[in-house]
Image (tube, rainbow, N blue to C red):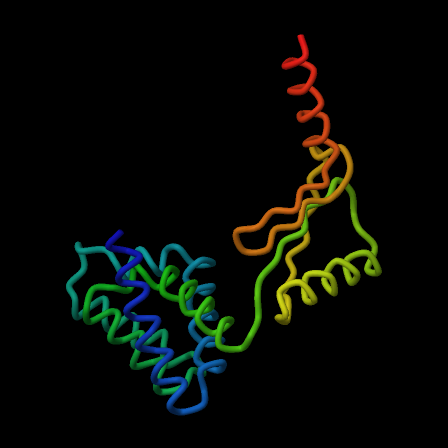
Length: 181
């Protein structure tokens, strides 16, 4: 719960600054890039969060990294603030929450398509258009293949699931047969 509160607080603060300067999308992209960099380099995150190193040594490592990256001064200061307040370990959560806030502000929603086989671009585009019409928002799609579905498609939009998979239909049939016994 603390992690969510921290992520929300810092993400909202960064969004407020970004809205004021009309650079909230740029700041979001930079924050996402930093978060991805930490994901790809867990050793760096380990160094930045390891209490065995002095705070000054960890801060020096962060400053060296930030000097090499072409981020805006606001994001560099934001990341330094996270480090100073011992919140750098929450950067993934802050970035994820900030992405949701920016998406809401930009009228974008995320959706996921899970299918048993590879879908054609035309089918993906049709599903995307249907979701856009339903949500009245621009849709960012993530497409995955899961052979365990046997056939069909599952579309997830926010909290809603549209399950048209053969696996689910078979499970429903199995339950109906059990109740009929």
